[in-house]
Every structure is written in structure tokens, then in C-alpha cells.
Amino acid sequence: MVYLRILQAPALLTQAQIALGLSQETLGKALGVSRRTMNRWATGDNGPTIQQWAELAGRVHAADPSLAAAIASEMGETLVSLGIVPAPPPAVAPADPARPAVPVSDLVDSIVCAAAEATATTPQAIRPGLLAAFDRAASVQLSVDEVRATLRPGGPSPGKSEPAKRRAR
Image 1: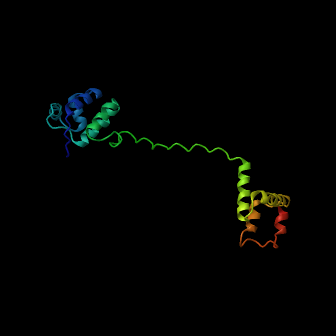
Image 2: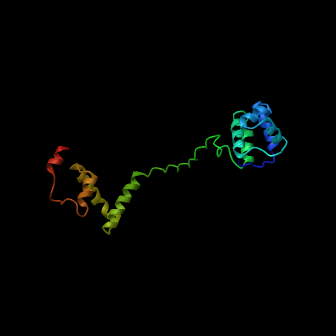
Image 3: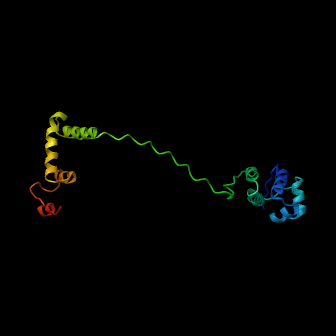
């Protein structure tokens, strides 16, 4: 058995006895000791084992949570570490504030700039060509993904089409 020397033992034991409304003898039985042992503990002669202190904290918690916390603290523990109360849920980090929506005109400008950079020209020069390309794709019901797949290196050859698939749409 491992004993824990707690200077506040007599006072804590008396407070626990009062909080539980038990006699010294009844509290002793609950902790597995005699009334005589309880009397010795109450006078500061020895004290409960670590397990008995933990048992006492658990019993007292329902009647006086702050006293149970004081007993646990004197043991160098907490009510959570003793398994008397559950651990609080982990703190949730606050969510990043929502970014403001980017205006569509800014998104389109970024596409125009990417095309201008890829062709080593100015955005003003490439804009009419891009508009014509997107207008044509829309008129023949091509999606942006279909155009991209065909334009990528290794994509389908421009001359080979899938008319049956296109008509099925």
C-alpha cells in the first residue's frame, strides 16, 4: 500500500465526513478501515492510502464537488485524472473568417491575364480572341472541361470527334 502524506488530512477527512453526513465509523467502513484507524487519521497519525483518498474524493464529489477537487489537489491530481469527472471536450479552434466573394469580373480578368501571359501578348490584345473562343464553345455546346481536355498535350486530336456522343446530349 502506498500512503500519501497530506498535511491537510485531518481537516479534509472531517469535512468529507460532514459533507457525506456519516459517522467516523461509517466513513471508515466505506474506506475499508476501522473506526480506530479513522480516529488516528483524524488526529494526523498516518493517513489514507492513495487509493483511499481517490475513493473518498469520488464519494464526496456528489455532495461537495469543491471539496472533492480540494482532496484531488492535495493528492497532486485532478477530478479528471482520478476519473471522477469526464475530461472536457477539446477546444475547437475558431473558424477562419469567411473570405469575401471575389467579383466575377476579377476572376475573368485573371483568366484573360493567364491567356495573355501564355501567348506573350497583352490582356487587351487577347480579350477579343478569348471571347470569340468561349462564344463558339457555347454555341456548339462544348463544356470548358471538353475544350481543356482537347487543348491539352496528349488530348484527343482536333480532327477526331465523337458525333454520336455529342448528339446524345
